[in-house]
View (cartoon, rainbow, N blue to C red):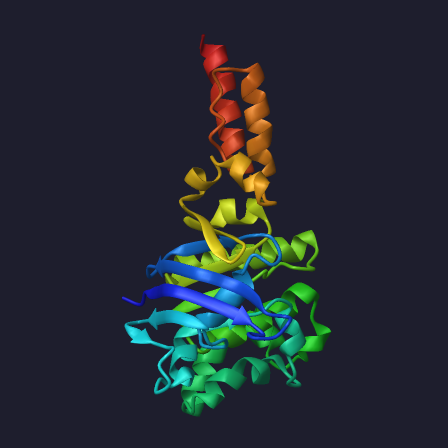
Length: 288
């Protein structure tokens, strides 16, 4: 079971200088295998700093990060091995595409792992198909001929080809049009269902995390402000608003509706749930 344990994690940027800033402040957290975590918080809350510790890109000022039973803050640990297990897709990952074909770009990680040609071939094909692209159609194409959403999927495939057990996505829909955004989120959801890998989705969108995540972690000023199932977390709408966040728009709508119609259930987070509740209410009125 690959779990991630964070103990008393503190990170200070530019320590001892006039620009010293505490980005993480004594964070304790455990992420169990196979979960879909939504990590939310406004800009500057510490989300990006936190995820960059999970595969050793940043070193903590204090504290431990234990991945799969190994303390990755130990100087003897081979971070290359950790990065095979924990894949991180940055914001705008398509800016990191550089090869002349989609195939070569997706194969870059597996080649660095010194796998056989046969294994590389298998992984590239699998990863391209996992992100919902047709292998034969795109493999010889230049990534730069593709749409923004497709390029982003190629970048995600490059991380998946390394077969990580944990996939961290930092704002994976940033800057995409609604169609590209829906495609990416739908692929991420399918990936979690089919592969069962742990996913950590960093997002500003309450709607996205409400629809996808089974656990939310809310960050504020470098600390964990809340953690729990989406329905539990979104009950704290006043606290969330106080830290610059909120609840999904549909939840606000249903709460307003409940003021007018007492019999309706307003404990919903997605449009589909709201639709079900409204239909249920209308049917009960017909039967009455």
